Length: 152
Image (cartoon, rainbow, N blue to C red; front, side, top):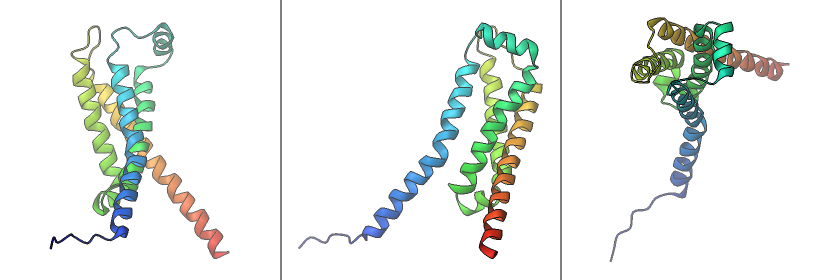
């Protein structure tokens, strides 16, 4: 007589739900990081982007793009990682984005007509911090608003 392991259907549903939840939070981070990588791979940016960079500092562009990455990373760390990471979500998101920014600057060393700039990395880290803290603040305000509605 063969012995079959008994697995509750509840366990299968929970693992499926956890996988979907993980994908829901981490897929935007991966897609946006791929978008940043793609942009960094372009040797000669299109004229529209080049003219925008003349008007604005490229540091402002780094700050904006990494603030989005920081917000997405915070969201994923807070809701789709373990409890320790969730408690330190801002720190983990900023550290992860800074490391990604470092890898992006190293990547640009190998792209023709591009150069690596340590100040870009500073702008990346500051943008990640701005994005992570902003998303945290939005969640905090949202929690406060829903708590006050429940208490009313």
